[in-house]
Length: 231
Image 1 (cartoon, rainbow, N blue to C red):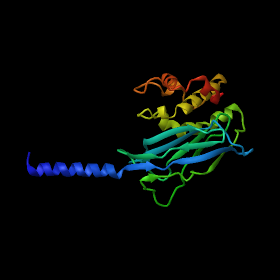
Image 2: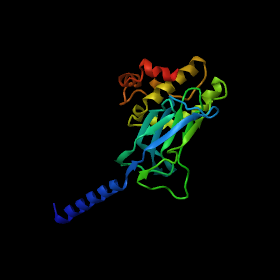
Image 3: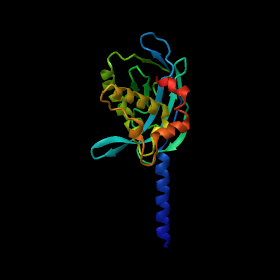
Image 4: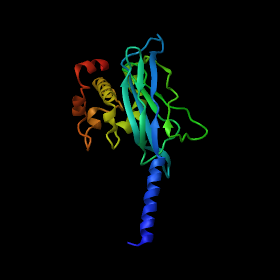
């Protein structure tokens, strides 16, 4: 192997390392409170998901790619939710645009909410990702409509979680409480002969991710204590 070839290989390795270093991101912690929009009282047991979604460029435009991080928590009796900061992670494929992280709020009987950072004139390329909703109070409103209307409303929720529930890295395992809650709500619609876009446990099971039901059992999410949250 010639000296010139070795030098070329070394330069390629350095370039690859620098490219990966340029795509390393971390995130600040996120804290907030969830209250009822009408009573202004805190709501406990709200499922909150934070999704740091990467994107990629295609001929047709920019589309969602992998997830650099997905986290889930529940609000406490004071309506408080909290996500810890996370250390630098390498985004091997994809990049962030302005709106990460997306925060999803779901509790049975309430309108679901999706909150993102606002669009900017220039794309936010910072390596430390922040949420403008940190420190804010989020209002949820009890859904006003019948069960069929609720199914239509939650079709937007399914759109928001589609890449999580059907990602190729089993990202749904990071949101077990939401997986169970969505499955239970889908069963309610089915029992009432209402068409729904929500994913059941069977819908997200299979391939290399295994059984969703078995995974939820192993994590204790199917325990009686957790069950009360969704009923």
